[in-house]
Amino acid sequence: GRVRIMRLAEYESIRAHLLSLPCARYPDMDALKAAHPGVSLDTLVSICAQESSRRIKAHHGRHARAISDHARRYLAGEDIFDVAHDADFPPCQLMRLLVEHVLGVGHKAAGALIRDPRGRVPTHPPPESPAGAHHADDLAAGAALCERIRFDVERCVAWDHVASPAVDASRHSAGREYEDLLEEKLNALGVPFVSEGSLRAEGHAKTPDVKLELPIAVRGRVVNWIDSKASFCDPIVHYERGAEQFQGYVDRFGPGMVVYWLGVVDEIAEESELRGDVLVVDDFPDESEVTKLKLTPRV
Image (cartoon, rainbow, N blue to C red; front, side):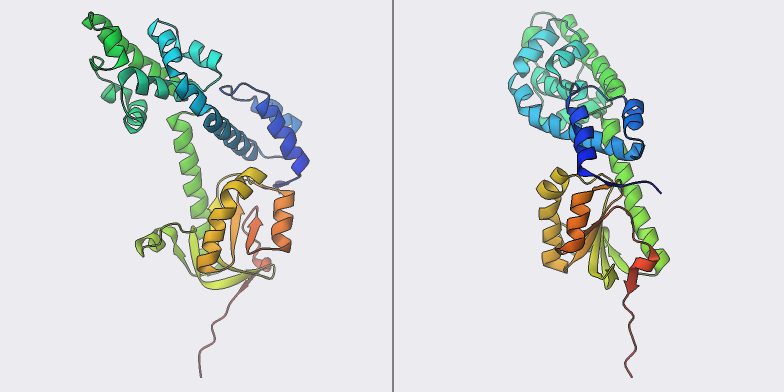
């Protein structure tokens, strides 16, 4: 099968390569796969997505503060891809910041506009916005700018492979597919469970993907709940984001298990085998590793 428990050194090597590239550039996956033949393409894509997401978050504030400079270049007629290239920021992210600033709209409205530019970009810039002020005496130029914004949003969405709505949608879709796979595996084993949707309906806020109605033992470890992650588990994902989330589940439901379907760094998997209340695995355990609790009828 695929090698999904990855040595920390190999993960660090992949990460170093990704960090050496411009933020807005999608890596050459064929070359990366050739350099790491034991790693699946899905896993490499997941590592790449996580790294680019971190870099975008880290640089977002700097670009938000410099947005008037970026806007000045854009309003002067420079192409959005040239501005994004010089800023080393994904075009969709920069376009969103530009739309907020130039049209004077809020963060949520800008997000809706990026998803539906034909329906959401106004025909003329609002008079009080920077774009409106820039073209205060020329209605035709204001209308042309709005048409340009519409066209540029569509270009960014089509060409940005790092941070476009299509990328977000595909991640969400993959997450749902792996949750379905988890439920299929449990049904095949005959293990009864309550889904996240049902737990939320009962009033629980943050919940794992499934809560088992009866605990199971996996490799001798008690498992009361299982969370499904359509991603690769690196140290940052696990210790900075996951650990706190999973501890909340442990406090409420007892020990559990997390499946990172696209792989795990070896040190995290090994440490979880030895200690703690959260077993971290890279696939659903084989039937031979699962012990079901049998309910015996009372006599």
